[in-house]
Image (cartoon, rainbow, N blue to C red; front, side, top):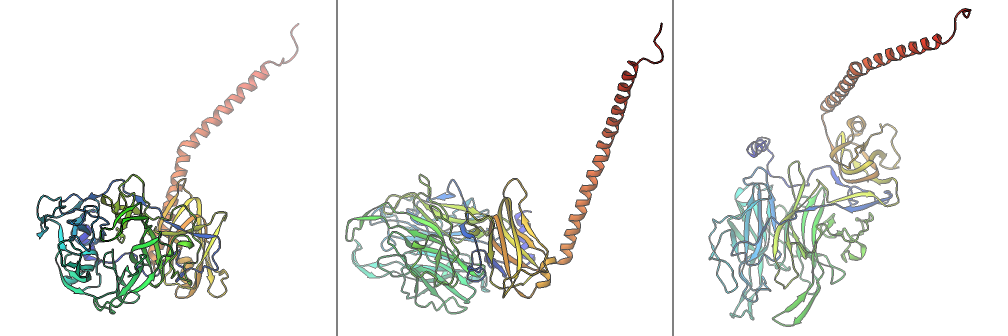
Length: 587
């Protein structure tokens, strides 16, 4: 189907713009806050999903005004009904007056840049915008027009497309630093005003208005994360707190239902060690909870000349990892216990974590464009395809002449984190809390090795005893290669329809399998019966074809073989009788 007909069909069906991962009655397999009973689950472990990182970047800093992208801090929006469907925003230093290798948003000119794409792979940087970019001493551009600059003197901007906004002139919303500090001297040693930030809105993500400054107790020189919190009906921002020594995460909320009234920030994640800090986090709702692509920072730097010059030598890394929360106020990282925040939750995140050398989600690779840093955007879900996580990769430590490139990592649908059997357990058992059976079908998203299976049982919500009235059903990988299932039926309506509307537990038996998500769906029984009839009919057609093949090829062969064998037996009989004398011997 062409892109035109795809967009037209989406418009006719009223698809509209929707956020990913907000399907009702769907649960993450690791979610022991809403779905999983950690006490009753046996022999399982939580495992980070596998990503495939593009070998080459999608684009580099190749415009004159893109003096240094540094961390880049990207935001990406995918709307298949829009033209073009992929839009992205990123930050850049357009000049660096203090030192070429030490650009700072507190001193040097910054900008918000825009690009778009039809397929999310080939990106276009428009050249029709007309912001004047001063050609300073360290500006390497060939002109003063910043072609794809949409806003000057902003930093750390997080862009969000609001699916609930009815006023199209305000459908794009942004949060971040809106005003850089002002100095009273040319050497920028004496600061008059601090940096300030807040919100702005746009109809197209290009022309921004309604700048509103919010006096918040946060750091503005970081990558902010703006999103809609459906549970609280507020806009929320995960940003950086004011901690002087270590990077912390802080939560800011708006007034209910309004893109205004942002209150004081609350620190929600404090690192235990200075070499394992939380630089920033891109947060998104994930089936009733919250997932985060967390950028950690090891702060491996030595200050060579203390004071204003801040000359440093670093061998530091910024790594993309994962964390999750049930309430945005306490966070569980997908890593070892000694690297959890001081505010680690006590009521969830209790399933054991897999043991591995690195807990990176998008691994850094030595000698590549992302050898030292990863700064991700919130993920996008392509229709019927893989997940994409766009990120900025950095090839050198802080305070060095490092280069930044925009790229992408892909993973299977819902493949962020799964649950699998622990080593030494032949079959593992993942048991849910009492859940409301809101559909007549249970579907799962899972990966299975050859001969692996996932078997589901219904349990009494109080006693956890298996119910008697159920037919055994399982998802089995009978292929020679590993199997990948997305929204695969694990319990059909024949088993589940009788229990719809009731509260039950589920027990997943796992063998050589990783379960990512499961969901209740209401499927048309007539449609399912039609599919079953088609399957049975197709099965009979296969059997009939097989019988016909046997009749046409095997029966004549068998008949010829029988005739040949009969003829051979006759010949043998004649030979035997011919050697025995009959009657009397001749005289």
